[in-house]
Length: 292
Image 1 (cartoon, one colour):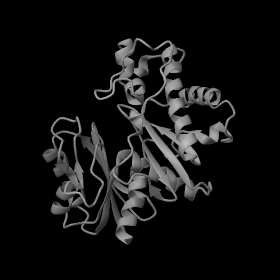
Image 2 (tube, rainbow, N blue to C red; image 1 turned 180 degrees about the vertical axis):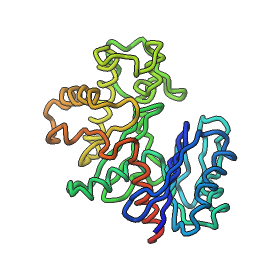
Image 3 (tube, helix red, strand yellow; image 1 turned 90 degrees about the vertical axis):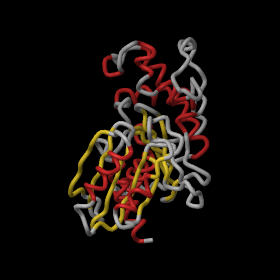
Image 4 (tube, helix red, strand yellow; image 1 turned 45 degrees about the vertical axis):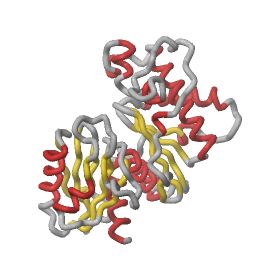
């Protein structure tokens, strides 16, 4: 069985085909340019596979997920130039013979990939939350195989957090909220604070401790509201060494209030390496769409 995946990012698209065992057979990637050019490249890739049964699309957003909305399948009011009000699902189905499409956010795709991987690894958890911390910040929630969100997808990158006392002069970079979580910990905040990218900032720079404090707050809020089996942190900003700082801050903030077990098993990096969570999740979601 041939299943398709489109991981649609603001910087690049990754298209792949695999089988019901989630094994990739062919993959390609290309820069995100205009909708017309980028979506046409998707169609060109998948047109080579006439036996394609279904595609799952994990897209940057915001996107419209409500199937009763006339804008279902659209990227909506994104700040990405030229992409607002793009009928993503409609274009793909029009040019690929109405192939079944599962439509969700990029972080939902990654969350589902990690959830399925945990199931296959017999971890015996029923829920997880996946945060991506990179150019932006977002999160996906899976509980018993289902995503959380009825009127839309979660926007957990835009929650408010308590400011670090050594960071009060930084306004944040979110164009909507200034110093929300994304505005304080997304990758571009290094340039805004220090004038250089995060990859050039040594881990003993206090900026990392400040950011760990904010991310630990998000993990605390998630723990106390959802009580997931684990929280996964992906994206270009996160490394195992940085995650250790987040674990330390989390333990201080939680202060023993609820038990979450071994933090090295509860606050983790993706099990699927090389940003493979979304593609893996897409195969599972495409299979789900085909079977329904």
